Image 1 (cartoon, one colour):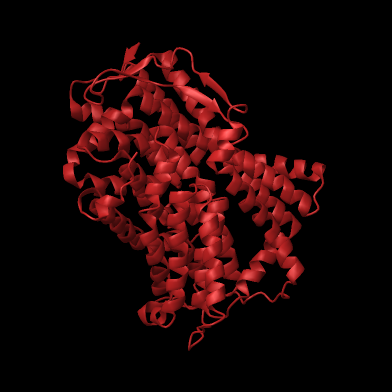
Image 2: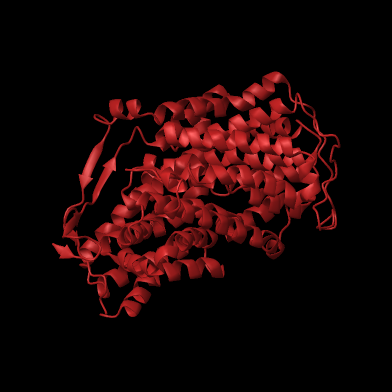
Length: 554
């Protein structure tokens, strides 16, 4: 048995600095743009092992086993989701179904403001839910450019819109990662996030249109903005609290798009805003505004062909996320592996635990009920429906695996760091330091999630890095671990618009290379203000009735 050590130097300041070293190295390397994210993650993992072994006295064998356990956990289930979502996306692109879907949605209205609501917010949220990891910004940015928006407008507005859905992105991957490192039921975490973000799901569409068209321009279409926000927020709450956290974005975005399109059948703006000009900026931010692409209107059969893969996804994942399906399948489709010389061989001790408490280290391989497995089945069925043969699908899958290789390495290394810092007690040391912020911790803890996403580019990565720290700190302060775990994810979504990865994706999708700094300056203050509003709301949930009654109980 090995007991965790929280103050190896006998000095809380020095011990905290040592505990922060892996995170500082990781975030510093990413922020510097000096190395790629996957290399930064591997370097930070090496540093984390050195700190755990030589400073926090964790036996080397345990440290390496914890790292391997985390890496495997990173691929199953998280990397498995990402890989198969991108596989389906590439199938739709190769068959032309995705292009038809783009043209269909872009042709609903000529009003630029409503196009933003439909494409940047609602349609972007669908792709955030289906794939995440930069895909929504790439898709919506490309569509907006094709409709005549300037590169700054297409990039910046897509980034602002891609916030409220992020916590449930890639079929709930951030929630899954948060659950992995905290040990808290993902359904509880998903439900808590669903009691925070819906308020901002209503706010963000208003914010988006104000940024583009100004206050007066927004007021002219406020009924459409309200319909978009409310029809997304209400399903976001209901699905996350009463169904599962995996299909929240997909369900909410489809309902939001349907409600907005339906509302436009009975309501029209008095003035149709046809100018793509971004308020306070020149129309042609790059000096050559691209005209809208002329394209024939897709037929009904083409539209249904384009929608079929995503209908199949919704049906299968709805089944995969239910408790009865998991209960029926897991007894015969599960392999539990207790890591030898690690499982129950580490004790949490005071002041983190009232009495010595063993830390479990079990890898549960539920191969069939993984969300990624459902996604793979949906992709294969969709491939056959679109006319792909088995050999062609295998070739696409091979290219997808090659495309996602670096992302999978990054995810595995991030989970390895998160698992190692949890089992070594490193994050407990950081949590004890954060507990020093006292009653203000709900606010600063939320901003910690924002900082993590801003620097790592991923709500999943931020949750993995800081999730257990949030749990430890909240327990020290007598706060709900579920509240603060969710706050890490909810605060993190507002950092998505300023992370380097998303900004590079936006500039690439819009063809505005070399202007990343302009995009960052455009969205920066929006990110800070919105993150602070989330932090203030979490403070209310922590201390003020009736907001405190919203906190999910275990």
